Image (cartoon, rainbow, N blue to C red; front, side, top):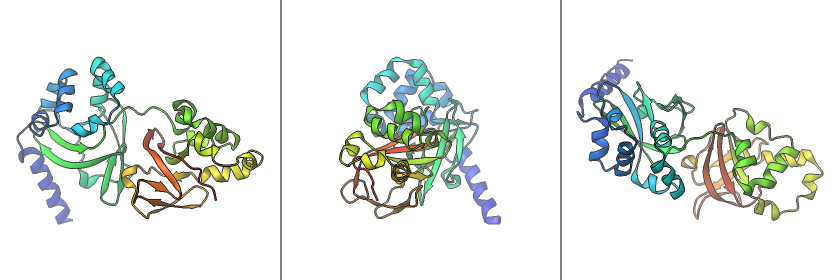
Length: 283
């Protein structure tokens, strides 16, 4: 207990005295140039400078912003209201979220009112799928560097499958037929390895269409309980699906699950995450 109390005291001391810079000054000095430019463009510089308001900022690197589609960046740069919403979605007010205290399943509410969901995979920690590194203690809070921009997440897995992408038309229909569509609307959370329409074209689906129980079993082979972002995947790890099937992850030549290639990762949903695969995981 004494060791815990001493650690907490050291953390508190560091947070107030180790670095006298404000969060905004730190971001400027450490080369978070894209984030700094957007903060200025949104008129939020003072909020990040304010020494009277303790906060935690999850700061995307310049490389993280480069990964955002150009169309989205144009929206952010031309719509100040949206830009403010996205930037404040990276901030937790009146709280210092230190990495040492992040546990799997922790949630926080951002300054934009959005939910920040934390996961821990051994020593790797994520927030809404973005990998966290940092714990830089400053005069007005904490900066945690992240490798992805936290864009708003507003839909469930089932809604994303139904409306978000034309490549999931077959999956959408099969989920309805197997009476599993509603399940993926529930809080979960779930991780779904979602086969594309092209993946279903590789197999004979006739036996599944005429046997709903078999179809449901195959679809459950693609769903895990819990949220497994790509940051948590390790080579050789085994995953248990809702049907009890064991899947094996391979990372030697790109991400694979059993014999299927993962062609897109980390489509975030309010109740979990979707990874897109190119082959149906059959028994």
